[in-house]
Image 1 (cartoon, rainbow, N blue to C red):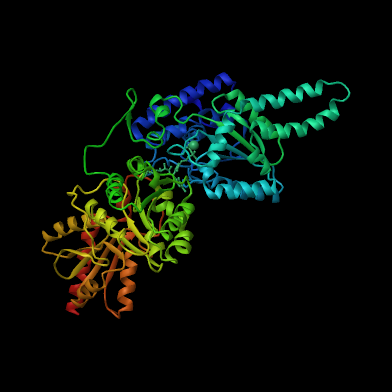
Image 2: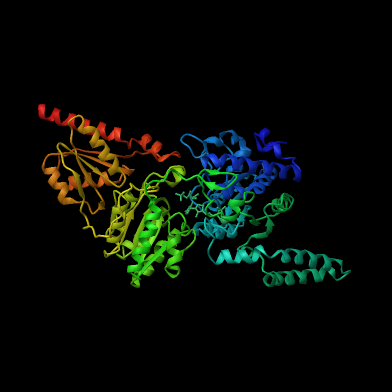
Length: 629
Ligand SMILES: Cc1ncc(C[n+]2csc(CCOP(=O)(O)OP(=O)(O)O)c2C)c(N)n1
Ligand SMILES: CC(=O)[C@@H](O)[C@H](O)COP(=O)(O)O
Ligand SMILES: [Mg+2]
């Protein structure tokens, strides 16, 4: 059986361990080659090759449900389920999604992207299965990082309580993106090395059963001995006490051992926790050596493991943020940085090295990160909670209930604010203006470039009360970085004066607006261009001045149009009694934006220079019609 022949999992049902190992080698080679061109989550996938093969050998997907938590490690699942030929389009516009996608395959039973949802979904599926009297297996594959996510523990608790037949495969590679954190992680560390426990348990049972006559009675006593042995020899007692049959630790690269344990799990009633130990990045030396970097890597040179860096351009916002945080923390010892498991992605590793006791990676625990920031603030510290816009959604109640309601000095450094590219729908940072601006006390801001971003961060840390400083994924504009300076809250920057139309642009959209103005100038049209760097509070003074000139407005934001910045402007004019004002809002319409490049995504939703030009002209036309009427 060769990999190129596989179109369906049915073809591997009778593979021997040797054949599975041969396929594993071919799959690794395939992944290393394909991802050297497309980039992607190489290390997580190299770690689950054997696991995925054995799962699809022993379970009958899609009748049996296999759920992939986070789903960034589902490439082999996609290869085995007939999508191998699409890997040249991985994470590209209209190409293969980097996460499970129901529209791609019946084998993708549950869509993921955000972490720690698999167990809750599995529980829902199990209840439905049992209510209908149906009979199939439900397997949830969840990493040790994802297991630190609060909702995973909520589901683990509930499944154990209900004693549902669910197989939880804990893929333990000791890594989240960075080294995993937490007490649970430490407990798993003991289990990983608890090989002797599994041997001792079987050996003792074997010896007892050999004792003639009293063997039976003693065996029952031994059961208690075995249980106490468990406590002594460290076992999955944490899981056993939650009502699971713990199987492990299991070598996640040994297909025979995996098969044996999965067969045992299939025979076991009630919830099973299979503790599978794997190596993240297995089979590719650079990824094994540094699975943090290779968690989600861009294209690379296979032989050297050298990442192919884009042409040297402006600094990446995450590096600008990390550097600014160091400079600010040097000035103010109250500053503490918090990240929910995104220390590399947020650019905070240098900060962590410089201020180890003022840096906290709390694991995949956004709710905890936000409220912990509140705890720091009430005690006079200056917490900066660095959190991707999309992941902040996971801590929203904490923002309301704990931070803004108590009007605490917490700075939410909202990273990846806007369209994010290859991660697609589940990761777009396009809702936070909407879900934050309705909250009292909070101030929301976004710079037009990296220098202004720094100044807004500096300003936020000088303000009382909660602040949200948004910044996009990717590189800045390439402007000089000056000394920190305060920016007056609620003031916008008038970049260009003109007539008839005012373009109010947020963040990176300012650059598009300026380019559009250059194009319009060739046709004698000169709209105002305003850098709307405060989303809350709005610059009401400027809005009134412009409105009183009878201008029409075009708002531009890389955010959902509904409830976005443009809506705030509309609401303002309405409340101020400007009944005949025209506001055209450009932003993301009522759709989820799929994976692709940011440029392609912007084009898809109309966030382009051309579309800004078009709408300014439209507004001019309306002006002329009004004048003629
Ligand atoms: C709610 C949420 N927070 C953060 C992330 C970012 N993230 C993606 S994968 C990952 C680490 C997952 O670690 P683990 O579950 O152990 O999987 P591994 O990559 O080790 O296979 C993180 C933090 C996410 N996808 N969802
Ligand atoms: C799978 C996941 O959620 C993370 O790996 C995410 O893809 C990181 O995004 P960035 O690449 O923007 O840091
Ligand atoms: Mg892990």
